[in-house]
Amino acid sequence: MKIIKYLTVLLLVISCTHKNNKEDLNKRWKVEVSEIQEPIEIHDIAKDFYNLDISIPNFRKKYPFYLSQNTPDSRFEKDRRDSTELNIYSEIKKKVSNDRIKAELENLFQHIKYYYPEFKSPAVYLYSSFTSDYLNPITYIPQNNYLLIATDCFLGFDNKYYNMMNIDKYIQRTMSMEYFSSKTAKEIIKGMAIVPRETNSQSFVSQMIYQGKILVLEDAFLPEVKDCYKIGYTQDQINWAKTNEYEIWNFFIESNYVFSDDISLSDRFLSLAPFSKFYTEVDSQSPGRIGCWTGWQICRKYLLENPQISLQDFIKNPNHEQIFAKSKYKPHPEVETH
Image (tube, rainbow, N blue to C red; front, side, top):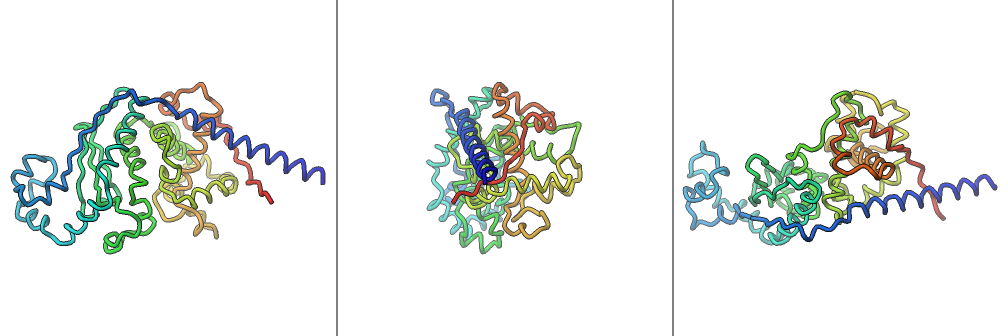
């Protein structure tokens, strides 16, 4: 009995330490950005496109990059009068606030510039894609410093137009404004090309850490945003990942996946999917991209173990297996309390 009590106390100590460590890491991202001025210029393409008082030739002059030069004006005249397109635009006006977009972008841009002073706020263009851009609703073009946002892809879960277009429910789950800042941050991080891939290894743990670095940048750029929105989960899915962290890692260890270069592991555990593919009974309960979540925890653990390392130096370090070794990542079983 004494041994059982001792183990219970030990696990409780570990659990409390883990909680305190996460709070310490969260404090790291609480930085002062109010003095950073990042003016935002927003252009509402959709508003002009569906305004019949603006001719298509004049619209083309205002947005020369937007409409295909190979498509006749008559086709766009038809599109801007299409009843479904107009109804979707009405949904945008009801459910997507331009003021909210501006406020969230301002906060995001200020945080990016805090860590990467060379960053310049892009010109922002809002448009409607007729829901066709639901997999990639944000486009960042660093050469022109443009940010294009398909506002029709943030109308909320179970929207009637998403159902009409047969968009999978697990994808619809992230098609709301709660996920907007995170999707934007990911696209800008990708465009800035600040996260290097390890050239000496294509191991599973290296790929997990690559994805984890992107999520750590979101921790820094979006310190007030919940974890579930950063990774594209529901809160229940975050809770499942936390509860099963030890079992997930133990599965990777016992399956000899950690240092494996098996390319199928990326599809099973890193790619967008309704669930991760353990090929066990837990598949239906698991969220997709669980390897990304695990890589995130490894990166967070590394920063806790190495607080002297700056965010920028951590991100640009291409030796992901070294990062893994120095993270001392080793999750513990969940403690059951009664």
